[in-house]
Image (cartoon, rainbow, N blue to C red):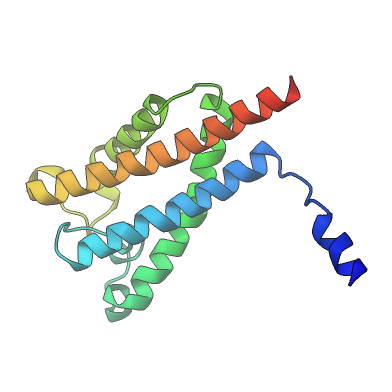
Length: 163
């Protein structure tokens, strides 16, 4: 019994800000792409993560299934680790929601305007319904704010403890 109390009183070593940032990126990718898949399922949006990742390159039946969506959500989570790493390197010292807001807008612009010709299953932005554009724009903004604010907060807290 005394050993259990000793084990419970031990604190886990704190994670570094970088490790927390990478975790935040993965969680953000899973969370917001899953919400995007749900919005696709309920016809709020004409595109989902699977549209970008699978349907643009393979025209098979499994890409439209639950398995295709789940794998696409997982891949977005993994790709989001890279996005959070870039944010950590370039923007972690900025506080507030605005840098994350800018990240979300920039990612939306890159995927829907700049890289759109690569993704054959994603209609051109002027062919998408207004519901689809607004839904995806809001999801990207929430994704960016989630990553940006979480990383900036952790960085700020770490710097406060160091002082």
